[in-house]
Amino acid sequence: MLVKAVIEEGIRSFVEQYRQRGTTETVWEMPVTAYASADDPLFETLKTAVSPTHGSPRELMRHSRTVISYFLPFNHKIARGNRDGNECSRGWALAYVETNALIVDLNNHIASILDSYCYESVLLPPTHNFDTTTLISDWSHKHVAFIAGLGKFGLHRMIITQQGCCGRLGSIITSAPLEPTKRPEGEFCLFFYDGSCLKCVEKCASGALTSERFDRRKCYDVLRANAVVHSGLGYADACGKCVSVVPCSFRNPVNRSTYVPFATGATNKPLI
Ligand code: SF4
Ligand code: SF4
Image (tube, rainbow, N blue to C red):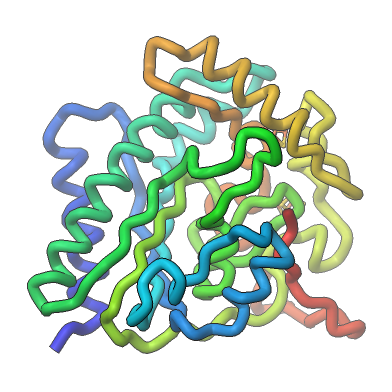
């Protein structure tokens, strides 16, 4: 019988061996994995929250049962190296490119594990599956991660996991029935928790991110400029300034021991 531990050990050992091959510079921390039911009603809400063309697991695989969502955290040195200046650091840009390649290979590896238990998979690309006019994706790994309970949205529009937000997300749809992860309660972002922090806003030199809104076009212009700067590394349309060395970089910064949910019952809404 397929159990989650088989998948999680498969992900962990693959990432470790990938690093040991010596063909990459990036170092990754321990991956985090979560599971959503393919029938979770939140998937249908993405057609309104994200895009009418956002895919649902059932559309992509009629007999899908589960969506596996995972987060590959970058080694903390990579984020520290991206702390200063306005231009994305070489280390961050390379980690972005190398992790995208890792996700493609890792998805194939997860699919082979699932196949050995006679389950099918649909593999989703790590990125560049968005409309270049609207800049909206037909499969948002961030929203899928939220639905799977992998983390919560931060003000910077990234997913904050228990291992922070400096890394890359991947997801895979499968016919394997696996118990869904319970979505965590409360907020992981200090701004949503008590109105404090705003460090990500301070770090966004382009003005794409404010406490009120996120200008997707301005942000994308920065990503494309960095892709030109780092063109020798592959297509590094990355930035990462708003996540590099802020309170949520490496952990969920809301202190659970003193956590009191908003009296208003505010919930973490998918932000796009
Ligand atoms: S830096 Fe602060 S305000 Fe921004 S997402 Fe992280 S916790 Fe929230
Ligand atoms: S990725 Fe860069 S440009 Fe985009 S919101 Fe974050 S800091 Fe601003």
